Amino acid sequence: MKRQLPLLIVLVVGIFAAAAFLIPHPIVRSVDEVFRNDVLRIIAAFSLVLGVGSILRHHFIKIKRKAAHWPFSYITIVALFISAIIGLLGGIDPNRPGILPTQVGGFSFHIQTLFSNIMVPLAATMFALLAFFMASAAYRAFRARNFEATLLLAAAFILMLGAVPLTRIVIPPLPDFAEWILAVPNTAAKRGIGFGVSLGIFATSLKILLGIERGWLGGGGS
Amino acid sequence: MRVGFRGPRADSYLDEEVTDGTRYRYALSALRDTVGAPTEPTGWVGSSPQWFDPRRLAALVGTLVISLLVVYFVRRARAGRRLFVRRISGLDAVEEALGRATEMGRPILYVPGLSRVDDVATIAALNILGEVAKKTARFNTPLVVPVADPIVFTVAQEMVRQSYTGAGRPDAFNQDMVFFVTDQQFAYAAAVDGIMTREKPATNFLIGMFWAESLILAETGALSGAVQIAGTDAISQLPFFITACDYTLIGEELYAASAYLSREPLLLGALAAQDYSKLIIIVLLLGLTAIALAFGINAPGLLG
Image (cartoon, rainbow over all chains, first blue to last red; front, side):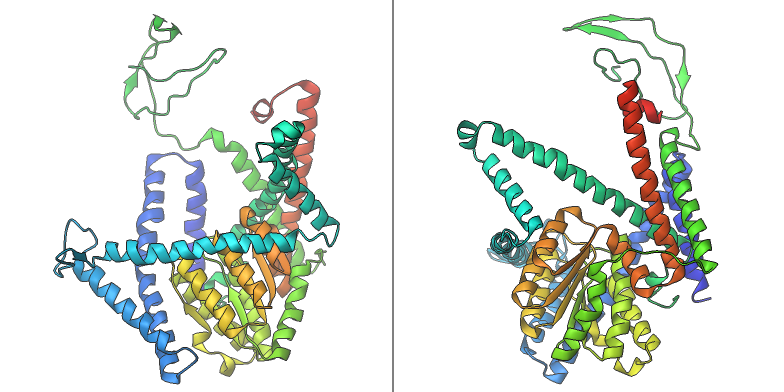
């Protein structure tokens, strides 16, 4: 039963979702909307508990075993509780404060303020690293070690030159050629991969619906 | 009330804004600058709920054809027929990468992407995780699986547990191997980068759905000296993985991986169906293009 029930639910819901794509009837569409929005949100809310439980367990174990860099686990746990308390008691909307005051004079520690002033700059810092990683990856990729790498180097060189305004004056056909590389060979390759991906998604979905692929059961079905 | 506008030579208009059960009358008005010449209105017409969208007939036919192919090849596989599967170097390297980690006494890092469990790429990543975990259980190699989604975390943990039990090493399974980190994209990337630089895994698996963090993870892994096997169906992230990783599963290879690694006949059957479907699409593309070129018909005309 533990194995059969999830398979049955997947079969029924999966076939219904596929049918809803073809049936524009309002009754079918509204049931489909409920599945897609409401049911998924309820599941996500439950899963949050699992996630928080995992974080706490992972870091408590680190502290208990005095694993490498264990003091940082204290920071994670304290930050988790502080943000949870502020978010739950201080309210989400700055215009509708909760039972916990989140403004002391001109200083605000509202959850949205914390998010905008701590999380967003930290995320932006990580994102900014991408520029440096792109440079190092490009250096590695553009070393002409074999035919494919040489081809990549040549294509990138043409595209970079094509994007420079001066090239249109010095070598007039080059920007158009660069455009052609993007529009024709590049798009053709992307579409080829796209077909494979779509078929792969389709076949995997079908395997799940038919119960051939049961990995999503947590290995229990294999 | 103005419903819509069509340019010259258009001979049809589909009104998507109607309310079922309400009666309408339509009139055409030929416009020149701001001067209009309206026709007599049509008779009263109305729309009603439909049980089939004819614009999706091609999708239905395609679905049925591919479904039949999958069922046919699965039945063939069940009957014991051998099916050819081409070599995928990224998957052949899994054994070698695990052996390297075991020899070096370092862990294996498995990142199952940042998407949710309803993403097929995540499901494929979890299937591969199951096979990798079976091997780490046999070799007694430490496995580290940081996860970015709570539901994926639960499934991944169960999957690894089952793999260790299946490999006869339930004692070697540690619940803390798989852990939830955060669902914030760059916070997750920072955490995984930290694991890569602190714990120096011998092998990194970056398999599943990735966005802008793909190169941040792959480059940090490359700088840490790990052997890296990546796989994604995100076309825009593939160049980054190909550049920074030793092996990359490109697009559909990701979905073939569980069948390839497990050699499960039923999964191999579905894989063969996938290949034949691709063949049909290629033949259709070439054939219809030839017909379109020969007879000067455009694509919508050919497909109805």
